[in-house]
Picture 1: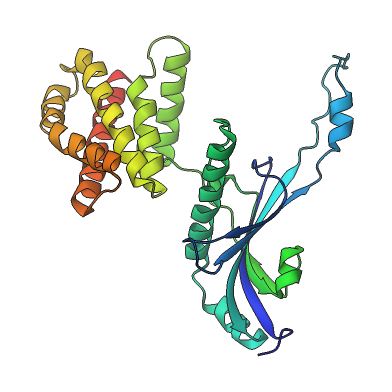
Picture 2 (picture 1 turned 90 degrees about the vertical axis):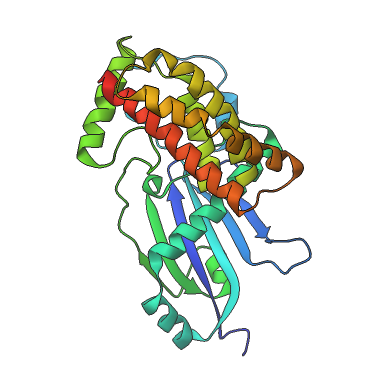
Length: 294
């Protein structure tokens, strides 16, 4: 196989904001000592020059109804280092590939990079990205340097993903969920309802679990679990919460065992299943409280 015949697969996203890491190429290895399995190429499109932005230090007058300011677009391209032998093989791969599966895997890998950047910079404003937030999603192949420079031999652009609630969220999915979410938001803003601390803690545990950060999920669940037991107590007589709270209390040993295992360094299959199961019950109790309030 010659250098010119080699083709590489890629998944590309574009988001209407800066993701966090500086533009450039990043080598990704699953384990120390192994060959790189992906290259992440980050580019900024349409970004204003930083020196011009930095020079504008004083407030200035603006006319009414100013036009919207152009925003930079972040392009993230994940290139698989596994080689495809020639264009014909690459075209066969693209024709038969599970495109959405490839996108899901690439998005998880991109979010691991953003999680590492968040920790490296100690910047809590760095957040993961979702499929529904992408302006563009492409899957394709091309020569190594061409793909890294934003060019390719062939690619498919995927349809936009619909926005929806997470499967473990506080409210159900679909149009009814959208209406219920707006109703809840209005209630919170009007002071008729409040966002509980355990809701945010449970969402953090869910994000960690979905991202495969199992130790973090187990530790976060312990805090969310204890907060939920305390904060839901005033609603125990509504929507069958008394029974749900009693069932949760019976799971305390499972939660503590998983968190203790996380502190020691790792979780086994039983601990992971316990985290998934108990977190689901915590969020089910939160959904019941919300539904009763609305």
